[in-house]
Image (cartoon, rainbow, N blue to C red):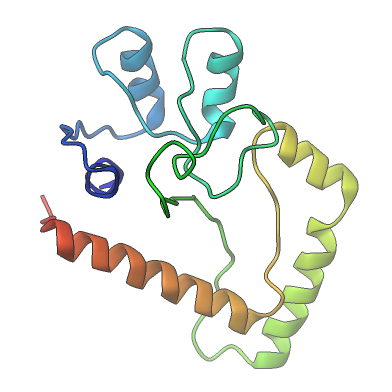
Length: 159
């Protein structure tokens, strides 16, 4: 789906080649069977540094601390483009709000630990924590709405 969304947002027609994971996709890009891929910095960085992959841009709104000279897609001519991977912790519906608040506080404290933060950043993962469970819930809902709108506008169908 990322290829279709990317094609739609930047206005370039591309053929989507589905892979079960990024490892074989990277091999095929390096081998010339596929022209490009959208991947996470954390898995592509070693190949970029080794000169086996050429990074074109990052999909986040801000440049990657690992590759500060690499522009964003927004800067490269597709204003407003952003597509990031986020990870989050979820709890069952109905979990008491005081438990969610405590989990949020504890996670935020751990994420701010310099050793952990730096270790993830070395791998291209920028750790952050939402200010509250409500903020994270709003973020997830907004992302789902944004992606849903693009899917509908592009006419993407489930295969």
